[in-house]
Structures are given as C-alpha cells and as structure tokens.
Image (cartoon, rainbow, N blue to C red; front, side, top):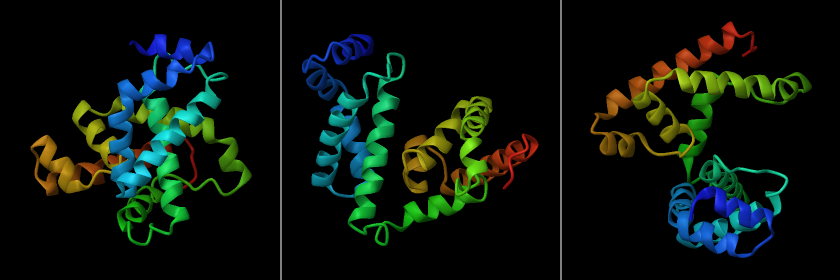
Length: 186
C-alpha cells in the first residue's frame, strides 16, 4: 500500500492504518530502535508506541510525502527516551559521544533566543544537507540521525573507517562554518 493511502486511513481514523504501517515499515522501525536501545524487547515496545503516537499525531499532521521519516523521528525519540529512563546511556556511550561531536556545531536550545531560532536552524540544516554530495549526506545522516557506528558505515559503504571519520569531521566543520555565516551563535 502506498504512503498516501496509509495516511488516508489515519485521517479517516481507520485502524487498518496501523496494521498497514506495521506491514510496510515495521521491520525498519524495529531495527532503528534496536540499534539505539540494544534490546529487542525494548525496540518492539518503541515500535508499538510509535504506532500509537502516529495515530494521535495524524491528524493534525499530514505526512503523505514523508511517512517513513515521520515515523523514524518518532521511534528515534522514543528509543532515546527509553534509554534515558533505564539509565542505559551510561552503557551506550556512543550516543553521548555523538552528542558531544555535534554540540560543537549546533547550539543547545537552553535559552529563549535559541528556541525562537529553531525554525531558522531547521532551514539551515536542510540547506546544509541538500548541499552535501549524496555519499556525504548518507554518511552524516547514518552517523548522527540513525546513530550507526563508524565501523558499520564504513563496512556497508565499502570505505575505510578513517575515511568515514575524516568525512564526518569535514562535514561538521562545514556545518559550523555555515551556521556562523548565517549568524547562529555557537
């Protein structure tokens, strides 16, 4: 079933939307959650919570052209929250490492000015990502959105780990420069 048809089911409040979502994206969502939590049962719980949250979010949202990214964002946040709740972040140090890497480029939204600039930051990030070559964009997103390890990215893309690390370093520097040029205080 196409994404537009699945979203139509959500909008009609037809419970078949959840089963169709599960059929089409369940394995991918569970794999994403499992990579973050490191636990199959927790990943299944997050997957089910994702369906509930999508049911409650559609409407008002209408993610016809981006259903999987919409669901992936939900499950990613749920998975990270679950790790925090169970204090697994201490054991899942790579999440903290990734946060520290991006912290150097993206300001923390801890004051009112940063919150007001969220939309501007979103636009800048979208322009930054669209300006990257497809390979660099894949590497950047796999590392910082999907939380894949450098070794996994290198293995799946046929690159060396040092090549992936260097690409990530250069991308972070490029992002930092772009943010500074746009007037975002770091």
